[in-house]
Amino acid sequence: MRLHRLACASAALLLLLSGCSGGEKRTAQPAPSPAPAPELTGNALGATTIPATLAVAPYLDPAAGTADVGDVVKVTGQRDFTLGYVQARGDRDCTPAWGGRTPLGDRRVAGQVAELQALDGQTVVATGGEAGAYLENACRVDQLVAAYGQALDTAGANRLDVDVEQEVTIHTVAEALATLQQQRGTAITLSLPVAGLAEGLTGPGIALLKGVQAAGVEVTVNALTMNLNAAGGGWGWAMTRAAGAVADDLAAIWPDRPVAEIHRMLGVSPMIGVNATGGTTGPDDAAYLLDWARRQKLGFVRFRSVNRDNGDCADGTVAADCSGIAQTKYRFTLQFRDFPR
Image 1 (cartoon, one colour):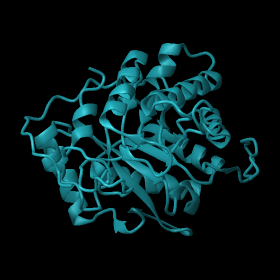
Image 2 (tube, rainbow, N blue to C red; image 1 turned 90 degrees about the horizontal axis):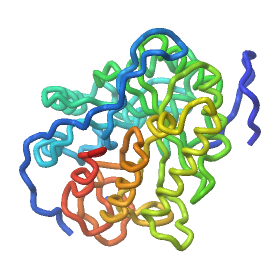
Image 3 (spheres, one colour; image 1 turned 90 degrees about the vertical axis):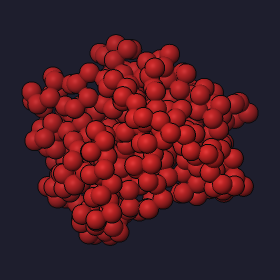
Image 4 (cartoon, one colour; image 1 turned 180 degrees about the horizontal axis):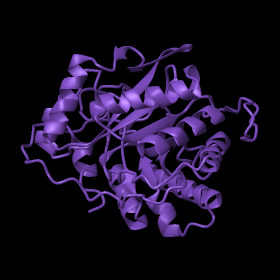
């Protein structure tokens, strides 16, 4: 795949980015959400205040029907979530839908969003993901801005997570995000896969970051520390090493920013339980990663996903609705909930 420099011309710039029964329930009152990072007010696109980054917002598929958000909040106290993934209905159909199939206005999804709002929860809307048709490929710039806005309005959100694990056009994504942030003051996260243990982001991922930087977009970066080779080391250690290499990448792209600021704009997201390739994220591995993130004073943490946060398939299965390991229900949600405390 050829990568080209982002230019003012309209040349297409291609980018290759590359879940036993549940444990007994614990009853808990919803805990206050961790204090979010400071709001950004001086972005290059204008004076619009960008919402503060949510310190903890695990991924949750609201259309799958495998997670009860009210129960999650009741049992764990976690109230903020990243809802995804919003995708295109087809490769050439720019209509946004949950998972590319469920309409944005689906009654069941709307009910979950309303329930979260009634519980003072906040949401991030995620697009893209590991598989499926990307809005970022099906839409022109103006269409993509509109699709992003429609998805955000449906969820009552102004935080967007663009998860890029496929080929996209840098110019389209960068210009759409710049316009969206200028018009709405949207907080934007780019979720990008790591290339390996110590390699940091993939080359195309770095190219995308450079593209949005050139377009004047303020972003945070979510390192997808999953599906990598631990190379003989512990899995928790492997995830921290991979995330540390991503921090180095960000420092190279934004050389004028101090280390503390680079760390505040960085987040980490493991896949809990059995990964599709590579290792298995158990509770001890998650604890190791969270401790490292606290010490490094990272801006946020997420994980994939609340739908998988149960022990309903403790046989090593890789599934969207269970973790593949023996665990109590919501074990990981309870672990992540108090970050950075």
